[in-house]
Amino acid sequence: MARAERQNGDPDMRAIRFAKLALTSLLAGVVLPLSASAVNLMDHERNIDGLNERNINETFYQVPVPGQDATQFRFKLKGYIFGLRMIRSNYSGWYNQTEYAVYSDIKTSGLGALLKKLEIWAVSKGTHDSQGLRPDYHVQQNLDKKSRRVEMIYDDEAEQVDVSIKPPLGSQGVPPATPEERYLADDTLSAILNMMMRGFANKGEVCNGTVRVFDSKQHYGLRMERDGTRRLKFDDYKSETISCDVYYEPISGFDPEDLPEDEESSQPVNVYFKHYPELGLYIPIRFTYKISAITAVLKVDEMEYVLPGDEVIHYASE
Image (cartoon, rainbow, N blue to C red; front, side, top):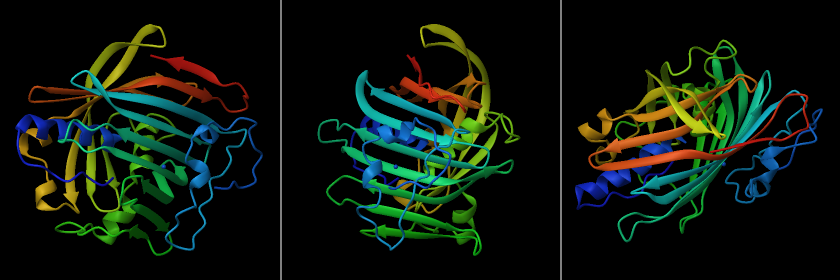
């Protein structure tokens, strides 16, 4: 995800900008014939139909329809800084025994002249097994004046990622991410699903280890450490969640001015995962980031899901 240009001045404003980055980093067609479910939650997303309208290459990106064996989910999130709602986001998708597809969009509000507005959507598709997730492609579309388009195609035979960016970035960082680092990392949307699927399907323990991410330029790790449990209210009652500290750790592909300072890198994003065994997922219902005197919160406001073999949409809300 492209980072807003850094501005000098008030350190509190810098903290706000980093808080927004930390939260948004944790967090976009036609169909293929399958034994399709009568319900497709990804159809609700407003940008899916325009997936191929601005393609850089000749590749035509296809989003499979979820079959009747798929688990589907859709979350609406809202983010707050200084108690002001500044982030709106959607994250939706599905997975079955071998495949997955996910969509996300995010829109942030500016804070006077100091914080730029941001609006991006993205789509990822891939496969998964007990070893983790393997993206097939990741497409990202910025909706600002530059309308930057990012297309990442994963070539399993050559073990590399073909990255196309238009208009191109001015730099790929110092040092740039290596071909191996790019290929072995998740894209930004697959990384979120990776964290949610841990604890199920032999994919490791929830909130444990590091998820490596490549976002078309920057390569970084999301290192997770468990910090006990906490009872949070969601869907009209309080239930136990896993408190997970997620540390943002740059690896390669960063320009020197984009590297976090010591205070920023030492403060984790606190993610609270709620166990949904019927979905086979741990849902991150709240993200909190504190730095200096600033607290930023991103939380699931509404949730929809469809279970395998079920045509009923189930609902939950904060």
